[in-house]
Length: 247
Image 1: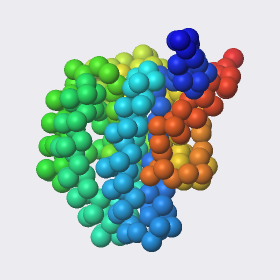
Image 2: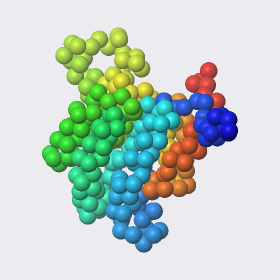
Image 3: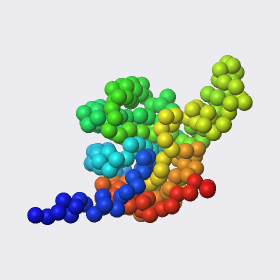
Image 4: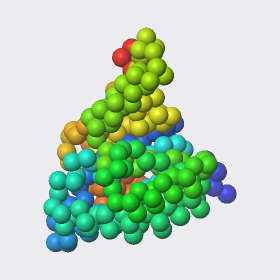
């Protein structure tokens, strides 16, 4: 008989330190499609239809509690009207079916960013799914939609000023913890590691406040190539890093 310890995947033996929160800048969809002679939207659709669900499932299986996916930035509206319309249709087609699947699997959905620029039907479906899944416990998947780090800080500051002017907050109580309560990510831990596929080596304003001590992982492969096995590689790399938090 084979000893039970030999049946445990090697990757799990090495992963003693599982990040609580993994954040992903979903980059490279268009370049992946272009290199294969496909339409611009093909990369986005592949990620939605084939990549996200197994990736989230695998993250939950590893014990990751939060996964943030930057799906649409405040700057993405500057893309061609044709691409923007196409991506909005992908959102519409996938939100309901994807959300229902996540709910059946006990996965919670949250959203950060300013939803006000999206069409009403998209906003309503997002709100419905976040409410539907609010009590799910397996893993929390946070979608960053119309999100930008500077935009989040500006909106947080406006909330803060409003609280001050309404005498609901005393400026003497302001510190990094109390200011964090005005951010989109209130009650969400800061990311332990931020992953950016696609070869670019910058955060592009992603989670400016929250990324202070996040580990960074820049990959040459594209988001449509982000398999569960590659997530294992990232977590293994995370295990080899020493996090000192300035100490």
